[in-house]
Amino acid sequence: MALRPFPFLYGVFAWASLPLGTIGAAFPGAAEPPPLLLANVLGPQVDPAAYLVSEKFDGVRALWDGQTLHFRSGQAIAAPSWFLEHLPAQALDGELWLGRGRFEELSGFVRRLRPEDTEWRQIRYLIFELPDAPGPFTDRAQRIREIVATAGWPQLVAVPQFRVKDRKELKTKLEEIVHAGGEGLMLHLADAPYLTGRSDVLLKLKPLSDTEATVVGHIPGKGKFQGMLGALRVEMPDGKQFVIGTGFTDAVRKQPPVVGTVVTYTYRGLTKNGLPRFASYLRVRNNL
Image 1 (cartoon, rainbow, N blue to C red):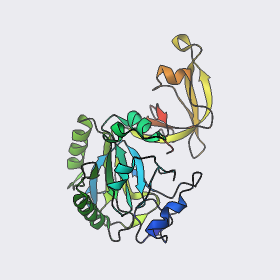
Image 2: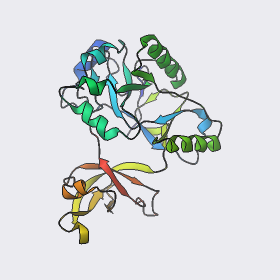
Image 3: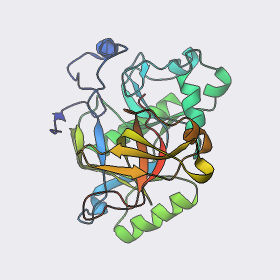
Image 4: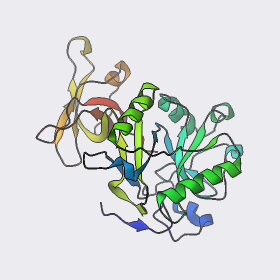
C-alpha cells in the first residue's frame, strides 16, 4: 500500500480537507474503512532511541471527529450522551479500554445499540493521536496531554509515552508490561509526520507476533474432537495457505468461523518458506 502523508491529520481520516464539523458525513454505515497508520513488527535494524514508546492496549479503536465517535470501519459507536459530552471539540484517535485482558467484555459493551451506563462508566478513552494537529509526533503527544488535562475527566486519558536509550532498556520495559498482564509495546517515530499504510513509523513489540488470515476450509476433528472442528485451513494475504490447529475453545470448535472470515492468529517467526511457526488461533478479527 502506498504511503500518503497528511499535513495536519495524524489519525485515520483520509478526508483531511473536510472541516471538523463535516467529517462525520464521511462515515455512512457501509463506508469503506479510512486509510490507517498500521504497525510493522520491530525489526533488528531499528534503533528504539528514535521512538516514543507506549504500552500496546488491547482495546477497541475509536475515532472522535468532534461530534460523533466511530469505529475504525466508520460505523458510529452508540456511546452514552454524557460520555460524548466530556470529549473536546477536537478530533481524537485512540482506544476504548476496559483493562488488561478484558477485550471480549469490552467488545460486548461497545457493540450494544443501546449503551448501558453502568458499563460505560468503566470504559476509558485512551488517546494516542491527534488527527488535526501539525508537526512531529512529539508535538502532537504534548498537545494530547494538554487537551486531556484541560478536560479534567478521569475517563479521558493521554496514553503515556516514554523514551528508551537502547534495546536492552526496551526489552526490560517489555518484560515489565507483559509481567503485569499487558500485551506489549508500541513504538512511534518521534519526528514522523502522518503516513498511512504499513511502515516503520509505527512498530509493535510483543512476545508473540500476531496477524490475520482468511478461512478457506475446515478440517474435521478426530478423537475427543470428533464431530467438531479439528483445524482451520487459512490463506495469507500473499496467497500462501497453512493450517491452524490450536488455540480453539470448545465453543469455537462447535461453531467455527465460516469460510471467508478473517481471523487473527499468533505465531513465533516464519519458516524459510514464509509460513508462520507455531500458529495458534486467537479470535475472529474485530472489524468494527
